[in-house]
Image (cartoon, rainbow, N blue to C red; front, side, top):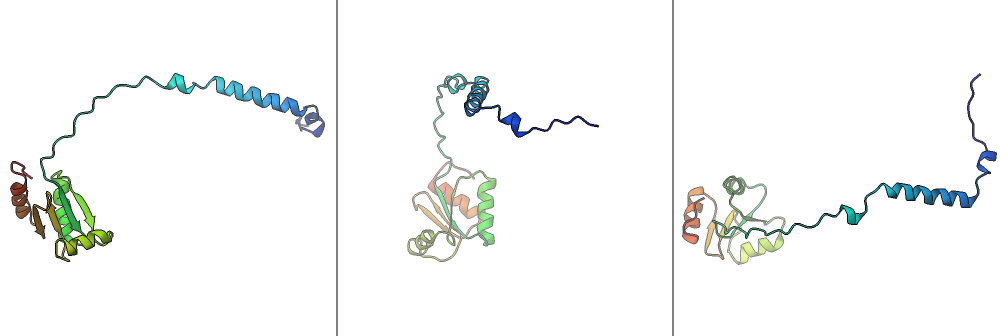
Length: 143
């Protein structure tokens, strides 16, 4: 025959409600005593002197594209592969970009590359034309 302990109601009846409260408070105190306080874990802050942002070797570049266009994909891959920063405006997802493409740049075709502050606008993409335009807008830069 096995000896098993089976709790019964008479065992629990020995505890009064204030005993449960006391037990709960004691448990919280013991658990929190082992945890470091926020003030103790907060190390003194290191004073950072962030470097000034590097002046870009390229002018501001905004491209107007769509996701399914192979020429747009080639343009984005070229810029990414050469670490050239750019802003991509997908004219299918951004109605304002489409309006700007049609009204300001007078085209429905993509890709369109805008260099600087509208200093050069390329409709379509070839690496050689892009490099020439970048040189005209930002002399001394080399893609």
